Image (cartoon, rainbow, N blue to C red; front, top):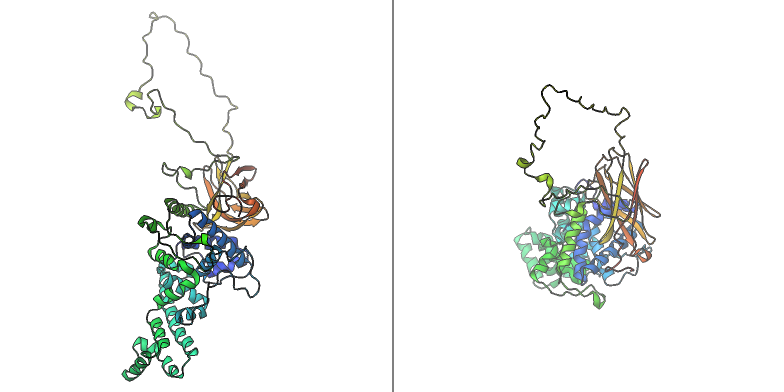
Length: 516
């Protein structure tokens, strides 16, 4: 199921993959957002804890990013490739991030060869990758057309049309591949009629002849089964090639939209499934998600919804974290806190009836009638030199690190002054051993941040913002080795104004510990 499909205005997965190969890191950020929840759902079927699942997700995305940038990986069917790569990383079958050598199938190819009697699987693997992408999302994961549409770059109606065509391609390929592999001569005369027989398009005599052959031939009978229920055949035969032993649990979650495993946790489901072939014992699967696992998934959803190129989220009593995050070196706009009055209540909230007409009452004169009165005191005139201070830009900055699969570095730049800024530049300095690999987009607009990787981190550009406003962005980073446990630095500038900050959180590598 398409868990985090982006707006239909964004490119299809195939186009984004092309952009990643040309060095467009923001394109990989969009792919990450679209597929991270599905990958995390499978990861939680393969490992015991949410923390280990997040580490597994980060390793997989980092690996696949490097493979695609090196010219390998999928051209269209990104989701099944990504899930198979996850199974291989979980099983310890991928040692490190690398660019595949010529002829190497890559980490996301099927985990095993299709059996000889898996007619639907053989047909699926022989189809063009575009058709495989359609079948994976619509038939195997059974995604709704509206959710699948952005991944395929089509309208919902277009997805329905692509699905019908892809199913027919499967049927035709099943028949043709079966005919090419027939071991017995008597099957050849029947093979070309199997499709028509399944659709009920044969004459009575021809239908009786085919039925008689099917009663004696298990191979041809299996083909009729695949033709009759394409969806079940694909789910039963194709999904295990990419999902391994976690197939049943993953597809159940995809069907009910259980993105974070919360339904299984509520039901107390502790069934165990065998891990992918070759997995180490510690990678055995257990569907016993604790509350922390569900909270992590909800937090990841909230984090992506609040990202880049928009004003900061509303600050409410239920969302205190929406304020600019405190940092060791950053500056933030001050907030006035009313002081309580003597009664313990906010003096500004006093009863209007007790606060109006507090001017002193006039006192009767004690001077004798006709006595001279002193002249009124002169009122000093305002100094001619007094003037309104000129408007000024006062930048604020903050930066934080959140581990939700990949490390997400979120930065905020604001203007607490009285004048609008010019163009903004944010420079993110990452520790050695880490690098920017993408930009996270919750909304796509020309007024958002545009970030490019540098040798020391990333440089991001943004247009002018008005006085009293702020804007935020998020980049995705891969990290290992010496970068683990280190903070991130941010400096922001607009003309002569500048601000800097350091993250209070450190880069995470693994189960909350430093090192890989």
